[in-house]
Image (cartoon, rainbow, N blue to C red; front, side, top):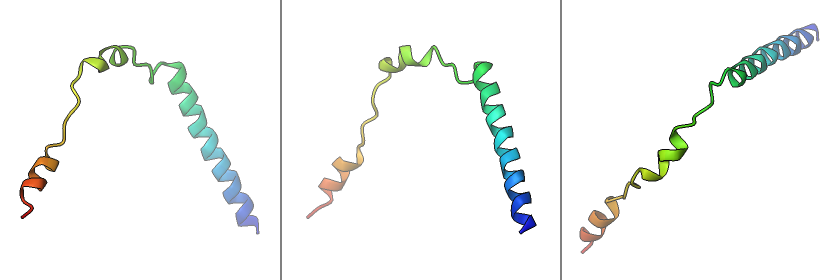
Length: 59
């Protein structure tokens, strides 16, 4: 039963480390992307040409 307490403690410690790393990344602007949303509408949508070739092979 003692191993459960140890594993829960280690898991909580690891979760706190990951939470701290996430908060650090957000505060330092790692997820800021100011350029892409403004130019996203300029890119063309890719069309899927597989539908056209599949219909011609049917007999």
